Structures are given as C-alpha cells and as structure tokens.
Length: 78
Image (cartoon, rainbow, N blue to C red; front, side, top):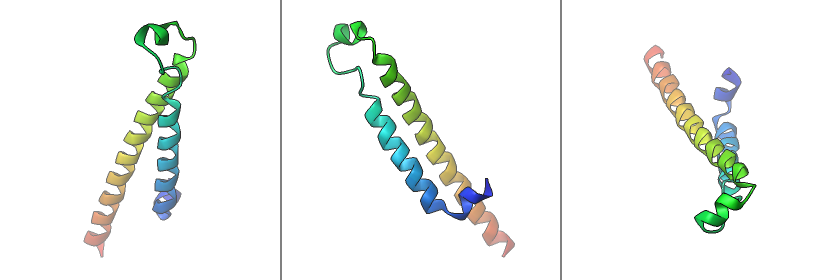
C-alpha cells in the first residue's frame, strides 16, 4: 500500500484512465429509447461500467484525502 503513496502521479494517472474507460463502457446498451434499452440483452455491460466508474471516482477521492492526511501528518512531525 505504501508503494501507491510513493508515486501518486502514476496512481492518479491509472485512476483517471480507468475512470475514462469505465465511463465509456457505461454507454454500452443504452443507445435507444427506454423500451429499446429494456429489450436489449447487453445493458448489463453498461451497468457494470457505470458502477465501476462510480467506484473509481470514490477511490480517487479517498486516495486524494489519504494523500492530504499524510501531508499534514508529515508537516507536524517535521
């Protein structure tokens, strides 16, 4: 876990790429009207993409908060 905090730019880059990919995946199966979307058999892929996108946003927020807490603690110790 400490390896994530050693290179925060890389971690943020991976999270942003993951967010963009999952957001793009969330559009699968949701291209028509509500009736067309309900009849489609691939809307579950879009639902997984949307849930993954929301989880990756949450992970990004939590990582930013953890970095801020570590920075504050490091200032108090030094």
